[in-house]
Length: 112
Image 1 (spheres, rainbow, N blue to C red):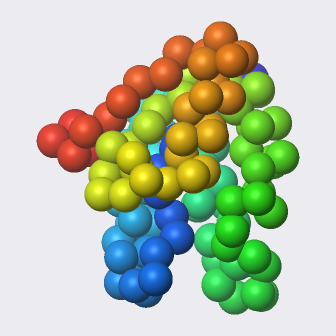
Image 2: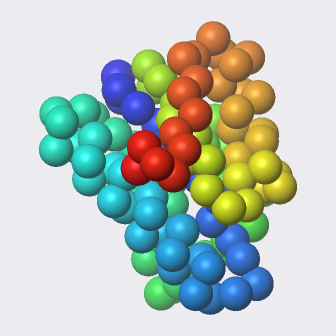
Image 3: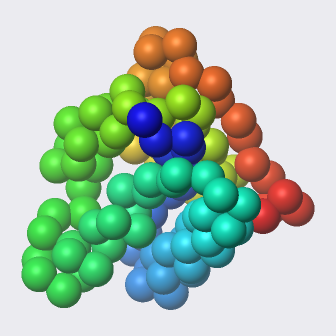
């Protein structure tokens, strides 16, 4: 079982915004791992494959994987960074987490 599945927005029309989102995700995951947690982030697991090997970045491609990993997690942490409210993927993953009875925690920038 995974302790925490980390959700955050990813795609952007601006490359710098997308890269910043990856770095924020990375920093938060590192903090959790350093605290001894078993953590999964789809963004960190597949960003390099998407950017380096042309895998799609659209959420519909990754949705099944995300739902599966949420089902294997104890908690879901939502990084409430710019774009999370508008992100189709983030909102779908939150709904899925609640439907599966997972603990959902909202992590705001000051807590990162």
